[in-house]
Amino acid sequence: ESQPMYITEGPFDSMFIPNCIAAGGADLPLSLIRKMDIFIFDNERRNVEIVNKMNNIISAGYNIFIWPGSVDSKDINDWVLSGCSVTEILETIKENTYSGNEVKFRLMMWKNGER
Image (tube, rainbow, N blue to C red; front, side, top):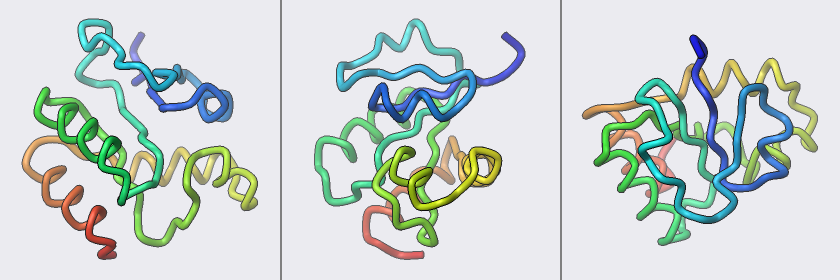
């Protein structure tokens, strides 16, 4: 309970990250999520549905991992398959998790493909 829970889109992605659940493509009731928890959406900046979901989560005041430009993987599974360790992935998630005003700026940069 003292650690943040990670929320991924897909069930397979959630298997690689400790203390992680999957939304399973469905909208997860936000009443079940704590403000310290972290949403991890797929790295698909041109997917309007994903960007809209990210904006909704941001508007509700939650933490979101914004994929850094240095990572080309489309999701956690792809990232692991590219040879990245879970420790490296968790460190990258920690360094690139945002909330508040900064997340809006980071989302805009990510969506536009800026690094």
